[in-house]
Amino acid sequence: MAAAIVTGLMAYGMSGRIFHAPFIHTNPHFTLKGIVERHEKKASKLYPGITEYNSIDELLNDDEVELVIVNTPSNLHFEHAMMAMKAGKHVLLEKPAAATSEEVKTLFATARELDRHLMVYQNRRYDSGFLSTKEVIESGRLGQLIEVTFRMDRYKSAIGVKAFKETKGVPAGGLVYDLGAHLLDNTIALFGKPLSFHKTTGIYREGSEVPDYFHYHLIYPNQLNVYLTSGLQIAGDTPGFWVNGTLGSFIKNRTDVQEAQLDGGMMPDDPAYGIEPEGNEGKLTIVEIDNKKCVEDVPSVKGDYNQIFEAVYHTVRENALYPVTEEHIAWQIEMLEA
Image 1 (cartoon, rainbow, N blue to C red):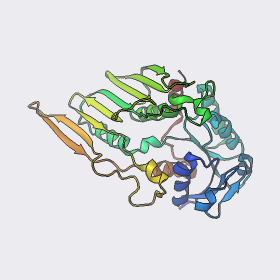
Image 2 (image 1 turned 180 degrees about the vertical axis):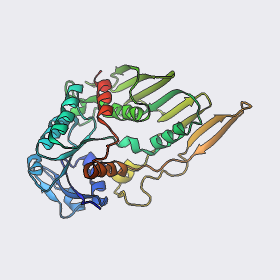
Image 3 (image 1 turned 135 degrees about the horizontal axis):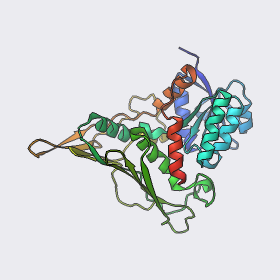
Image 4 (image 1 turned 45 degrees about the vertical axis):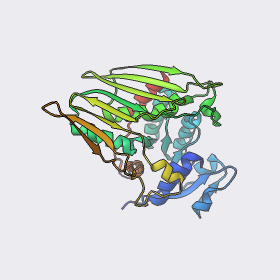
């Protein structure tokens, strides 16, 4: 086995604490060298022996670090990814990768010029609900697809404390860049680039400066319609995944447990990690030859964000193609900034 990839994190907020550090710590393909924490040094209590960097420059000047995870606020992703690559590091970059298509082009051009790997972290490809939906679609049991609906809804009337997400004019802010990046990536992973799309946004929270609702209608070949919606004033339960085809339908709630498990302290190597409890199965309805409807439960596929880190390892050590490609990100950002 090739040597473990020595890795450093740029931040230890929610993203670093939940989505990155536990995987770098438990995956034998990586060594967690250190984390940038400017004020409270919390990470070393859970990961004894790591380096506690006081600044991003300290991390980038550490010659042992090969891979840097850029998980700083979204408006700084472009700047910090560029700094890391110019310091000779490979980069795992949190979504959204950038605010504009021009920045995306610059990022990947720089990666090629410096012979560095730039990989964008799109963890929702490995949610149990998405994996279950993907499996049903690829089985062909639904026939020709008519419409696909993905939703990520919340009810949060208060303005969030993260100013970079809530302030008008801050690049890559607002709900569209936050959750839209997930929904668009799910769609691109399944169907590629649409023939055309229409985007609608709205502001409904009192005092909000940025859109807190969006809806995309994407048109694909063979009359496939894809609808992506998210809002911060949606009080009722809405299915996260709903697919209708000429032979049947599939519906699944968004009940992936990984974030809650990680937030509660469970590590990714726990046997229970990623497994949804019973009662969260998807519902598959198939119309049989006599027009009789047959309904069956579809067990949830195990969610597994560790697949991202396995892909990172094979990309860095073996030059394998990272599953979230440059084209995927270019298409996504084009639709986010529209």
